[in-house]
Figure (cartoon, rainbow, N blue to C red):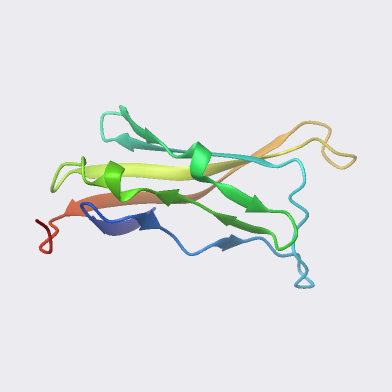
Amino acid sequence: MRRQEIVRGDTLNQPALVFLQTDGAPVDLTGVTARMMIRSRNDTLVYDATSTIIIDLLTGKLTFSVPSTETELWLLGKKYFFDIELTFPANVDNPLPVVVTFLSTELTVVKDYSRS
């Protein structure tokens, strides 16, 4: 699990996840669905970020963003947790959908000093 700090009131962006084949070509993400939820330590849903996920089928990139209006509500010093779950559709090689989890992260909220 990765550990990361987020300044309260900042937008939560991560570098794009890029899915490449062994030859460097982008993975075909056609039909892939993704979901991401941020939860507290006691598993309470804090924010469902699923609708912020963008999958670029041509480049194999996945990005997401949690708006600053959301993170400004998070409590200082509190730890939140998220991951991104991708579901790949069934195909000839895999007759059932394949679910894979990426980017399991523990976020710690820190103070924002530049504020009104």
